[in-house]
Image 1 (tube, rainbow, N blue to C red):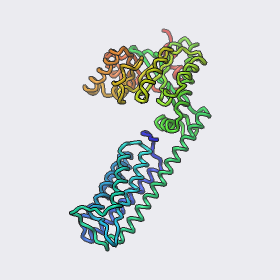
Image 2: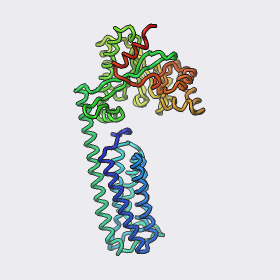
Image 3: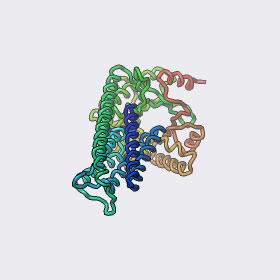
Image 4: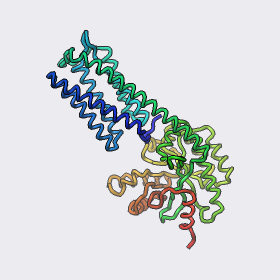
Length: 439
């Protein structure tokens, strides 16, 4: 259910801003009251909490929502625990209530986990709930605690409890909105498939001379109202809904239609098309049959289609993956490992996988020219690939310097903005015909 690229809704931002202001004002009020009563240490603690809220507000204004959330969560967790152990000590007449804020804090962590899937959020949830249980079930305090007087806490217990429950209700409301938005996005995405709103853009792939040898098909969603929606926004929705096999099948079918069209065009006939295949799609039981049926239906030569697999495919079921890759390779399909070096399993299984090609991730390319360590790393990657008799493709090429450097290292194919951005099928065909026209 996680989505690392999920964009925050305006309602989420507004709710977080309001919560930040509430916490800031609340802590400042307590700080003033504490200082008037002579509770200097407690006043200082409340002042730190108010400062944390102000910092969070500043981070939000700068657009650093993820940093603001993480800072707010863990700073408030620490301050809440300190207050429970130092100042809010339960007595026979006034109970401890500050620990109630741990519940909305855990709820906030869960909301953020829905958005980002980060393990730090799971840690926050666990720590908040464990602390809540401990403070609800015991009267433990620090031996050097400075308990606030009951006359001070008697009013505060009601106020704190009301605000904590109010914040919890707000978190639950935002959680519901986030879940509903995800469901709404999934419904829209399903409608997009039926309404032919999905389309493929194509980005050039060139050889060492800069001549076009193929392209990568990149999925786009042309929303009737929002315009083009970023793949980083709708692909996680599709994964969450289990729609990737269906969408991936559509992508392969469209790529085969294009290849069939190009077979009758002397300028475009030599070109190949690369398509990305998700782990969910590749590991479906009927993937091979659907691949072969699609190729046969459009009468396309298998060697014109390249399947780009991510490392997440490899870690799923290595023996099944190897068997399936062998069958696809035997049929003439080219298999590439995409974004090489960004996962965890490549070096362990690379020698066993029946690959044709390694595609070096753009992050390595970006560091290669400006950093000697980056240059050494990418040189070793290229050398390893060549030792394994694999074709090496570098993506993310943006400058002539990067192109020259990687060409000298021994890369065979290249892709990036230097050669062209992803464009529509019509625009790609027009450009490719001009560049491939005999002189």
